[in-house]
Length: 501
Image 1: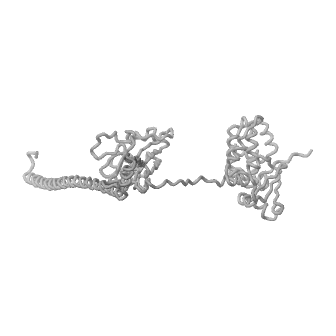
Image 2: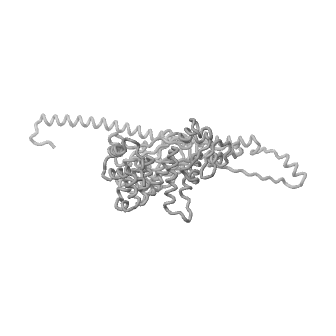
Image 3: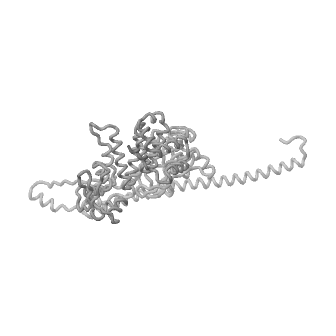
């Protein structure tokens, strides 16, 4: 209400403003009524389209049924005019009605394809900020295919739109318009590492929709949630989910398991085809190479070791070791005699080494190092691994050498670490050397009590310097320079000579 002191001109102006607003509201009301009328018409048309699609679907079923029956009628397997002369003749001769026995097997799952897709979202707490920056409501996974059908996963932290008028949190989106039947299950990874299913298994059928469709335990049409659980994974809001057991190290990991059956039914001819009985076997190269070595077929090289002869093949040795290649192809005596004497390795270790050369399989090395006898102790395994490391380093078989280093890293003890460190220093096994230096630094009080430590002090001055520099925290580059200065720039690896008596 205007104040009594308001002037006539002001009142006239207010009246004109009110009339203007009434006109604007009237125009907007007319526009809203027009839009409402159009929405009602669109709704009517959608129902009419649904009815036509239903008729189309029924026609498709009827057409398929007619085609199937026509197929059977053409082959005299069905119909009102089946041939009966043979049976009637037989019946008239025997006086008994004919007896027939038919068996049919249908496999409705023969075209079903199965697949899984794992989607890991790291830095999950940043998702809301990212969506705000990008002015988006959802984040989508990459496309993935199961049975040539294209899907994707979509997540909406606000529980809003996941596609079109469909709302939810985590949803599976079918990106094609084919008529398929499929089953899906959604899983979320817990901190225990186990994938736990969220919601029930979905049984869906896509009926050639003009638009993609979203599916999920909490997916619903906007404004209609009847029968649906609370929106959110396991009913949790996005903020609750961030603090739950489902987010580990800032990452949410979900998995979608799918079974997809494409359109079409197996034809009669398909069901009558014999199933192929050909089955491709697994790889056999490693096994065949081992047999070749054990039999020695076409061998042209002999290893002499501890009074025993081991046959081998120079092409294999040259392909696997640059050292063997140099021995057998560069004019050394072994290239002429084809005999290589081994004096610095025991028989069992060298056989395991050669078996790896042929098969590239670490099983032989593991078997050697794991074999135990009643008289064996913990040092026996250690010595076997060290022997295998020495021979693999000598012949530059890098993969086996690294495996030995890894095994020795597991065998570090106060009594053994100094010996392992010396071998790592000698063979320039840098990672093994670092592991030994770290162990000594962390367990110095125990290590210095061991006789092996005193032996290292007197016999390996370079190793002693490395221990001292590492324990003092000297950077690796500066420590290496100091060791080089001690050795006069030569490669570190020489043991201090014992004084002559």
